[in-house]
Length: 167
Length: 317
Image (cartoon, rainbow over the protein chains, first blue to last red):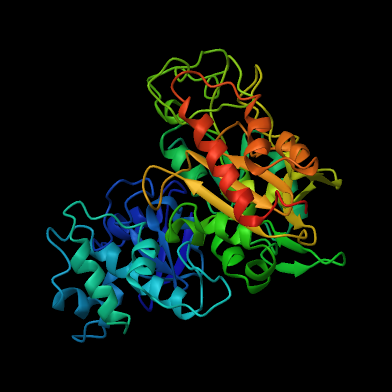
């Protein structure tokens, strides 16, 4: 089935078996191996990409449903040699060990910071009608969909705090 | 995944016609539950009708002073909506306590309601399950798994409905708007959407074949405070082992039954002047734990009483 979307700013057209997930299309059909397959069931967040600016699990989404969407993967965040501020913050804060979860963590952070900028609340937001303040508790709650088996969470938290302009 | 064909309708009428024309068709919205189960071949639709782009993604005021949540509004969209946050805080809290940010961005209002009622053995295809294969038996009964039903279970199934959102909607007296393949439309209380398992636990809702949820309608918010509280085995991104929604004098419990459990005995006790603890005791009197899930009796009694105390629902409202 023919499917077209915009991937990291470039047009992409594919002829796919409808069973192909967005994650498999990115990795196997388009050769972008940055998005990782961890659990393949939406439990670990390693496959997180941005679709029309919002973070989703690429493993649970069929590629054919993304006709016309704008998809951003870890490969599309940097501007040439200039790293995205979240990428730079992860490097600066040493926010990884093995690195397998890192592309998902970074894409999820970019999406999460936009959600916070849009004023979205989280479960640990005391006042649902107040402005969003990204405390450590807020960052932890909002990032709970991304697991790190190496448990680099303190550094990931520091990186997000830094990238979010809250440190 | 088993092979399937795929279509993307332009409107509700076309979606209903496409589903009616293809036996074995399923509606696909966010897909966070359906696609997952298709990978495991627990769900094997032969045709997918992608309803995710139907014009059902709006949150609108109703003439009665409530809100109509379109079927394909995302969980994130509803939880972030200023009107929902101001007037239905229990619903915003319930949604935000469910799943992860990524999943909430994809999951929809109707899809959340229609996710499968399930337990760990439902996913274990090496074990019998009356939901996967009617008549096969239930491995959860007597199995090593505690997050099972204490209300309304049967000898065929003890699974629970995992939604947080639906528990708050139940306490808020939400109604579900449904469209059918022959042009018919109807609306039912949310409490009538999901079934208890009985001898047919593979039939989880009262939807007729080919019917589609088009919206959830919230009546005007009730007088009195609202709250949603969830107990679980880790602080975030885990299913409830028990949850409570209170809205005014209405109470619903989650993770205790095959459906969001409206605690009508507790509500009646409250209306009769009972204390929070007495009201929960009245509800829990009909609970039937199975040995593995006995802990839910005290958990729900205490969680419920705490929510009723916090909201003041036991103060004669």
